[in-house]
Image (cartoon, rainbow, N blue to C red):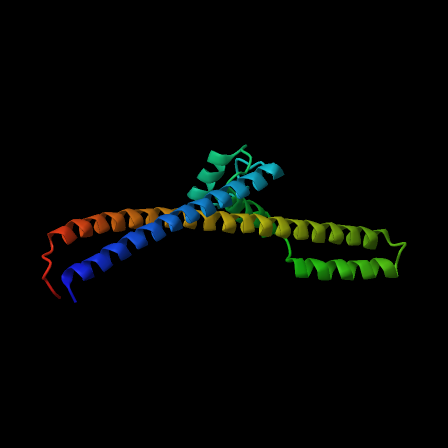
Length: 193
């Protein structure tokens, strides 16, 4: 095979890879922008205000610093959603029974209250058990939804980094392809590999 033919093939493949990587960078950037914008819009609409403290006296320094820095702000980022879900809701739910345990307790309390409808203590216990199961259900549901927002936002952050890497790859391939064109002009017509 002639050296010039080989150099032409490699150079044009390099240009093709440059175009492919440039398109990939654009699509990844579009995905990152969409994910970030969608999470921000959806979280802002909920108007969840981050407290200045998560209420945990044993929280680590990074968690305390996060809540102090973001306190009294409306949640807008996936990182804020993750910290609020794990370190605020999660901390407060850690002192409560699981949803399965709370559901079992509410069924038992309701059965006891139904058996003795005139017993005020049993009626109060059933109401308290119902309130607990509702709190646990709502807390776990909100926590799960916020962690989904965090995951979607994090995928957008990964896409943003990937877009940057693809763009750098496209630039590198373009420069190498241009160098290949320059080299192609210097290659003798009769050289072989």
